[in-house]
Length: 207
Image (cartoon, rainbow, N blue to C red; front, side, top):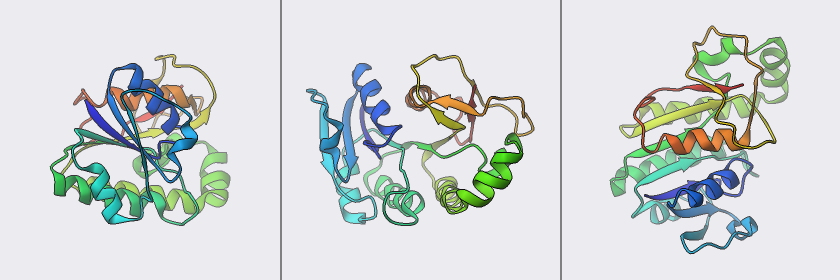
């Protein structure tokens, strides 16, 4: 499959690129500075660009079978939401249907999965703007007519792919560890390229 990864040099994006190549996908890594990946592979194309530039995004999306979004905050506010909206518009223009988007546990109806610290200190105060950006990103995605899946991972940690994580749990469940390796997040996102289990759903991810 020919896929494009937005946010390819981020902490999740790097794992997506590496795992996608290992799965024999044709990969385009989109980032402001894609050369910082320091990966050379015959099936890897580096695409430099700003996700806030609609024309650049449109040109990059053309010709791909699927899109994975793992955007970070970057240097400008609203990068996740505005960037994702640009990506969706490009997908519509070029007839690309599959969209796998990384959001965060705590967004939407998954707020109940969080503990007091995450609800009231981290997302309620320290990362309030980031959460608002994720909420707007999810809204744009859900309003689209694409074949979208939104993954909501808990706090990122270092570690290998385990494949042993919870996903799709109820919004009332609160006995998770509220952490997951970046490698496992990438593993889940790539699995959604060929699965309709969570089509038009927002599964949470956590140990």
